[in-house]
Amino acid sequence: MIRLFVAVAVPPELAPGLQARQSGIAGANWRPAEAFHITLRFVGEVREDVADDLHLELERVAAAPMTLELEGVGAFGEGPELHAVWAGVKENEPLRRLAKACETAARRSGLKAEARAYRPHVTLAYLKRPDPVEVVAWLSANALLKSPPFEVKSFGLYSSLLLSGGSRYQLEQIYRLR
Image 1 (tube, helix red, strand yellow):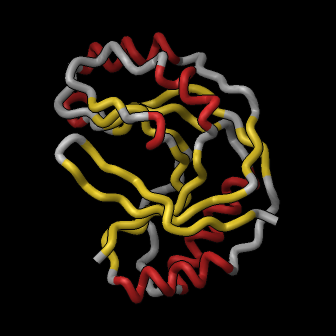
Image 2 (cartoon, rainbow, N blue to C red):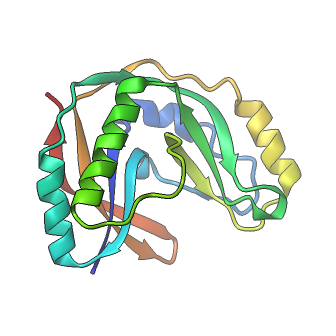
């Protein structure tokens, strides 16, 4: 079994601006720069043969290079159920089409449909029972986050190894946008 997701990597030059915002919530598990990505499709635990089928389907995805921008922040969960804070991605139709194509590839490889609505973001921290007041203060302080535009010329299939301090990601395959 292998734990997978499909994503666009965040360029390393954006990391310092994101890392500068990684404080102010006690107990937050702030993500390292090498973990910054925009998920296109979370896969989860699959058998190796399913992973191979997914790879073959992702090779068929056709999409053009695109320009993205990070904009705003948000959180997943409410009150005591808050579990992550993130940087948003400015609305981008080509990114939505790419995510939809990755969803189609996942379905063709035998995976169940993703039930959650697609919300492109870069997770900055995972939270465990945070003080909601601190989260609201962080959201307010970082609401105007905006990155310079960046070019996306590829996306990747990543494996995720769950460790005690968080997940470690490894690029397994890269797919060029053309």
